[in-house]
View 1 (spheres, rainbow, N blue to C red):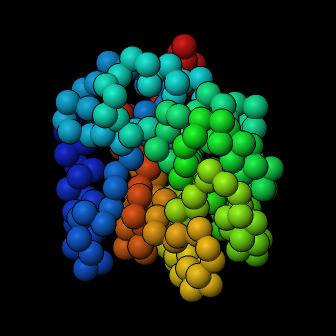
View 2 (cartoon, rainbow, N blue to C red):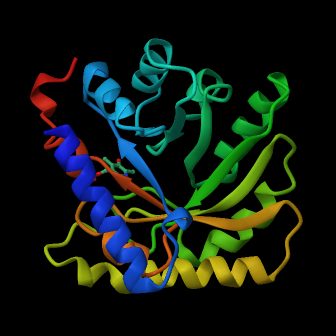
Length: 232
Ligand SMILES: *Cc1c(COP(=O)(O)O)cnc(C)c1O
């Protein structure tokens, strides 16, 4: 099942790239493995996948210990400042920076570990109250302030689009995030790179790719539905 799912997602990514006149290499697939057992991650790893996304610190660090060292781990969920210390030397990218306070905490831990942590700013494009993320209006200011901190590098933007039945409904959301990244990029702020756009999930990643996503985060489409009842 995993192999079929994975190949289907891969085909759809290729087709979306083609429609958009983009190269397949411009888009990184992140296999979102939250709630799934390491056996399943191993299977997807064997198919060639090296980018995995988790939304809980404890789950990410546990899986980090059990799986091969050449995996790129992505922290895609809301992050509490007191948990940053467990993460900074294990993740390749934190997608969910939405406040200066969190950026400061990452900066402090990065300095302790003598590393540079690449981050994305999470933007709540649709302004949904139930979601984390900074508003479109405040994103640039956060980029400017966070960019001054040592030990962190701003690589781009991330958004979680609303849950919709028709993915076309999210096209304007993706377009707005792309526009914002172009706007911020044009400001040439020191230490701010707008090279990554993390947007699109199982329901809407093809539309996101058409609108310029460079990273898509696909969970259900690869691993199947999540059963939160049986979570360890
Ligand atoms: C769970 C999750 C995903 C993947 O969601 P699917 O709809 O299962 O593809 C993507 N991004 C974030 C931030 C998530 O928490």
